Length: 339
Image (cartoon, rainbow, N blue to C red):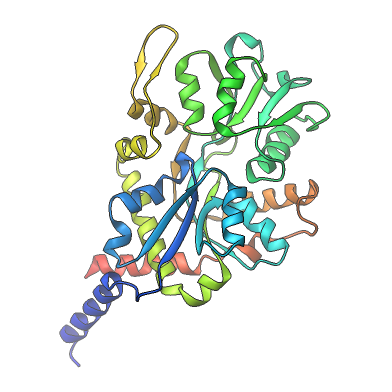
């Protein structure tokens, strides 16, 4: 076979692999935590990247990682966009799921009222702080890194952490029910723009480009739907690249997906939903490839979870992270571009 025909056949194979729909009954069910940092899955769905690759996908949002876990445990999902701690927590209990790719960096911050007099983490000693459910991913980050390593405060001893839904955190700070909150986007930006709250600690400044949400897959899906998972990762990579194509790429889609309402500041200035997204992007961004520094941070989180008693044995990041499929997805995408 001459080189020209070989090139044609390769192109046909790549095209076929990318666009032929999955067989009936092979719908891929993807869950995601309803947070702006998981915007790539919204972009991939809204811009038709999954369909372009011939995927039959059902994308379902959930309010938090623990709720996603319930759906995964019930066999209702094949994949999820979720924080890394829940994945390795389940792994420690025998669920052989895997982290496959990175979704974002940044997103988490501590806010206080401007008139509280609290200007740094040390000022929260002896105070009440809003957090999420104990044992969740954000709780690991709060207790291990933010309060433990950074502020040198003992959770539940030096500071009273009150669990509450994310939507209640900002209002609780403004109404002085709590003195501070460990929250994320778009909530941080919404209350910052209102003018009564301030950010006293930005995780992405403390650890630039730290990984948070990841793409993971369940054991059964990894065995039976590997080809489809690779295509999901292709769509994910394309969505991340679109978001990174300009400072405002996808901002309108994100604002609509999260049903953002305009925010009015204390001095009467009105910020549009797109303004809120732009503000949030100062604290978060998107990446698809997990680096060695990302792996080191995930290892740090694992160590926190073990020290906090959330897992009963030490783990290594390499046990839970499998980058072979995202590398395969990148190679297929690059080969398709070259044709």
